[in-house]
Length: 236
Image (cartoon, rainbow, N blue to C red; front, side):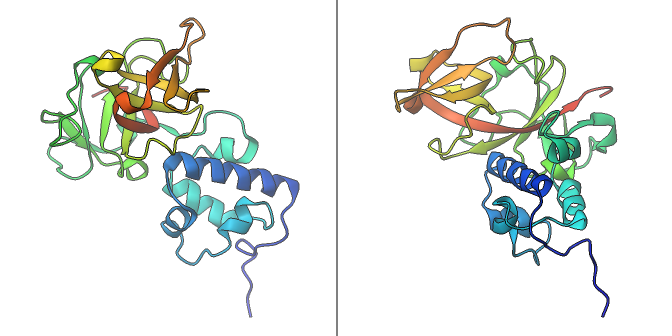
């Protein structure tokens, strides 16, 4: 009998424990449970809980399958350095203006966007982007301004996915937040943090030159979108 050592799960070494913890963090940012996250990559994986908890090592092949399916930065997964999310040039994603499959791209300023009840955005997209790691998103939008630099630079494009449970949030991660009149009708991309008052959340820029937090009421939030990743726009 031939044994493939790439997928054998052994007792975790210190490096595998760290990888497991990073995988769990990435999975939670995606808003998926373990079965959804690993099942989409390999339906035969059954030891994902042990992997994330550091009780089992993860095989090389499974790592390749995960990084090939999700926009996770392989360097961050292995070392903890760099951005968690993968950044890919737009020119590598297969843009096709006539392709009706994929995720719509809207070349608009966030402050001008209307999030109506009939869809994420109230106008026709310029084209659709077919890039598998982000194909579960609702839209691609450009970033303008420097308040989120260096996490998101002006001109980069973010992939957003709507969330509906505002009680399950990943503190310190970036979200697109849309508020009502009680919070000045804001539409903004910010890092979110827990507030001592459970009825509120804190919005914060990643650029240290933009000092000061913005506090909003949870029930003033009309919509929230997880920023699943970003792409750079070289040529459109």
